[in-house]
Image (cartoon, rainbow, N blue to C red; front, side):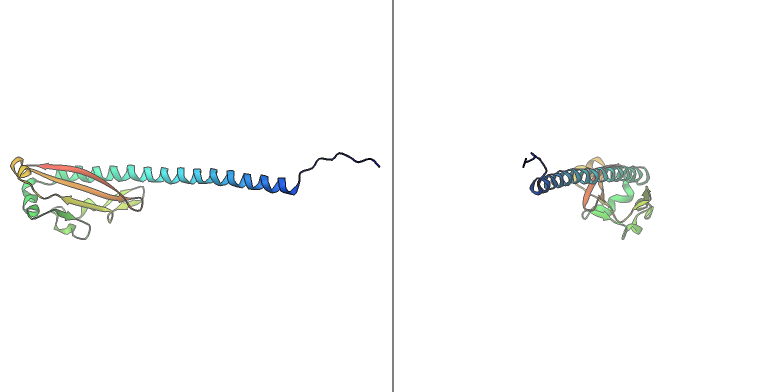
Length: 146
């Protein structure tokens, strides 16, 4: 009787190839998901920066030094959507909508406490902070001159 020299793939080889392919697919999928998350985060940061700049520019255009200086002599004057009715122009600064997303609860405006130098030069420093992508924060600074 003649034995044939048959070469076949064994079960062990098949299992090893499945494990290796699973590992490769897992690594590739993880890389794709991380790239997508970073892209979303960067896009949200760009939108948040643009909204913060718009708010800063609006404050610099529409607010006058003498209207604000009395409110910030005792410490930082923090404006949120909850207390924005105290502002001269009301809560309009908290209603920016970009790509069907309204930035209102994520926005905080802080007029920093006056220093001797800022009073001498007639300057009010302020910051516009926006929370984006869950817990990340972008802060843009601005100035109002006398």
